[in-house]
Image (cartoon, rainbow, N blue to C red; front, side):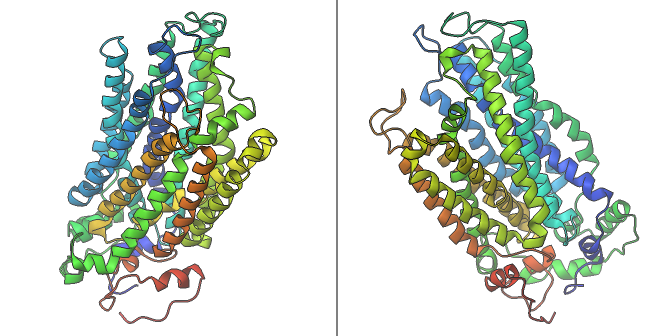
Length: 541
């Protein structure tokens, strides 16, 4: 037993993989499934919203004005960022379980609200949509720190990385199901209301019934969230929160004894002894936190921020990929519902072939090769592929579309088999129990700030120097934007050096909550030593 670790926590660390582990993965994972569905399904219907509400009678289908498009697409990110900070903090104050139910109910209510509007006027519809999408994002934001923290505190130390990665991997299935559900809905409406393309009939190509399509797709997000609520409420509070934060050893032992079906001794005296030590009572803004975990928090926030700039900027060249392989034709050659179908088909195929496999490679290998190695490899490979896309960009566009598509797919694959997963996992493992959810929320919020920069800052930056899209100013062009993104990934690899390796260690070892002599917590030199699988020097406890 490491240091003077509580028996209940030691039992959790050494427990064999049992049914309750899989139950926790499903319960936490379904929340993340819903998160991904809700965040990414909006991209399936924005073109449709433009056709319905912003057609001006011209020779091209209606599109959302740049500012409206930015608001519709980004408002959920802003809500998510806010929710990550608020619910991350609240999860450390009230407990993981109590807050977990709040976030889910908010997601259910706001998913339904997203499909409602107070009138048929474009402004009213967009304002209503943005209002509910903000609060939907707020609930989704809470799921990030809570799901990661709950899974890390339930898992054993041998397979903890795989369990947290499995929760995060449900994001891939959420994106996949979002595309599949949009396919089903659009196919059903297309079969019932089969109209000609925009070229043949400007107004008739967008039937009145198309207004139901986007509403149904957005509102469906309430279904998986609602189905998960009952099981979330039945989960007991994590033993680490109950013992180390709430200081109730008896309840922690009782809850985990029921879950693990073993006898566990309640050690109230040891709980008081551990939690009342000075080194286990410092706050987030204290000098002690800065000394012990300041660099760790800097590492988790910067790497997540840089990763999401690159990850969410994929929209810059996604249209090149889809157009090159014939998945999406010019908008004026399709009807409104047909366009939804083809966008959904493209997202489904990308998710199936690139997104989902990357996540599960991480699940399979993270506890073998470690978080540090996967994150460093992912950032490095993304840097290489981004430079390979950027430097000969004109060649790819004019002569070799298939080469561009292959490199694009590998960039996406190594994002998911790399920092997109590990930036979610590591913050749930390296901070003290009383600050774990808060620090994860801060790290995740930094990531969402990067997502906003990547999705929208680079959208404006990447505009053509001479012929920008309608409503946008001149930018530096896609080639130069890709070059900058390659440098962003390189910086991500460098900041990864600040992130410690948690493979095979208990949460208390990582945070230094057990060992009396561990003054500095997990030191930076641990990174290279554990990443290289070197044995740790003997420590006295």
